Length: 545
Image 1: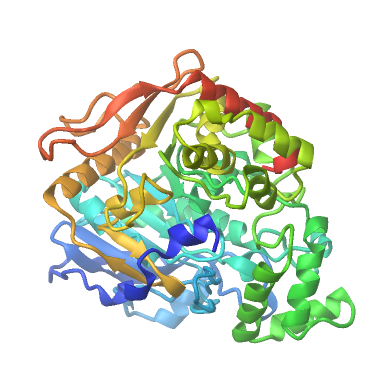
Image 2 (image 1 turned 60 degrees about the vertical axis):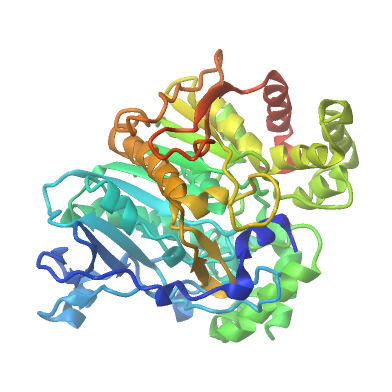
């Protein structure tokens, strides 16, 4: 199992459907919103918080719409179907079809009719409220993830002056199938799952005001593949800028293949789905009529049985993405907005028998020479142990260097804040602060499991206090573009990152278990890390990121 898969399923044997974890529901008026085309009834999950769950933002991508960019929501159809009744939005919707984490599950759970958002708003929020908006894009390697596992009710309860939107988008082969023929939209569209995210942002721009939000004050946020998505939105070729700020957590620096590099993957996928013969046109017709079960089995087989570009993920399509994101950032071709970007202390998403093998497995276009050059940047003399050497040498290129690369680019013309998250997931049983550790803290002690499931663990008072500190920094940035404006009084002032003074904050609990003081502190990015990450940025062609 890969590092990202390990980080993903956590306490899988004990996993429960998050839908079975019921938040308290309070009876009160004011939980109905009128979008202008339909009314939606939400849950009052705290006395000051309403959750509107499963609001559609696009047409269901079914039948001939499979493997295509989403169509805008037909609001006339929704209005006609609703009639004069408020649409129930009090339960989590079906999540998008899942891929296998490789940990023993088969994948395949979920629905194709999943292009929905969950919206969390303060009680009484209404049009004209102009509250700043956070749009959250979940992680999961682009092949799994259920937004119900990352609820935001308690964020609004803590800070009832924002609106938060959590996005469902198509995953794995259903969201990211790609072949050169998709350059002709008659056949399909590259990056359909990413286009879902764009369409969700467009829907937010048009309709979030009904929920009290300000469409001109949107911040996008994500972790892992969600962090990578946020990075991609920075450089995406879109007709309008749909956000004013970015929070990128543990950016998943996965390669963006070309459609041509994905041809072997398509051929094996079509074959295993029972659509391996005939022209590409006939194969696509067959795949569009195939059952979800057939597609789920085929995508899982491909990921486990093909070398090179085996994952269904975004591609350089010459339309949305015209170049690799690192090169666009380096060349200044990105949206000019402030950012928060960071990683955990001990994360890596690349694994293998040697450092070179791990990097070449993660970056299939990396030559032996480039891999050796990377290894040379991490001599054992600089580390306390071989294990730490391997973790840093594989972790920086695969995820950690996203922090340096993004912040260095943004700081040339805007404000950037960076962090090192240094609080382990207390239920992980491992050493160090691994990938996704902050999700446990920020989302009520969640560990995700197989096929969209999750289990919540009770949090101690010191953990709850630290979670509140994190949420305050994040929502301060959403509200003002600065994590310090509305931080908790006990939290330290978070100095910005500049290219001359590479300051960052270390986020951790108070080491004496005192809930009324912060354990977080400032440090400076080391010169060695800066040099290594600058080297990683220079290897953009080998990494295709």
